[in-house]
Length: 67
Image (cartoon, rainbow, N blue to C red; front, side, top):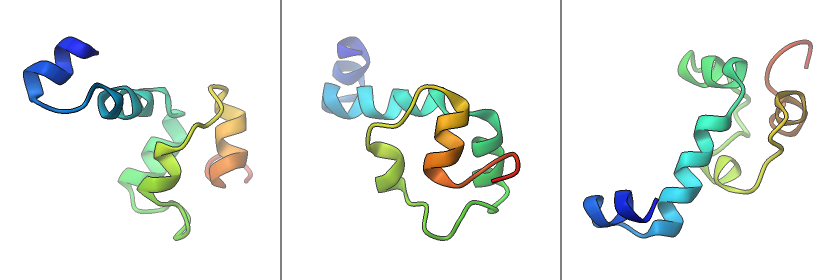
């Protein structure tokens, strides 16, 4: 992560927070890309710590499945 940060001339902390977005459940990513996420879901929400488990993410963000 530090190598990426150095190469991109950005803070390593920011890189680690952004890389975590790769852990988002596929249904959440699809909802965001389709513009079907809850209006209350913001980038700020996604930058805060969130569950690694996809089901927990769906509950937290109100996206996916039957939620």
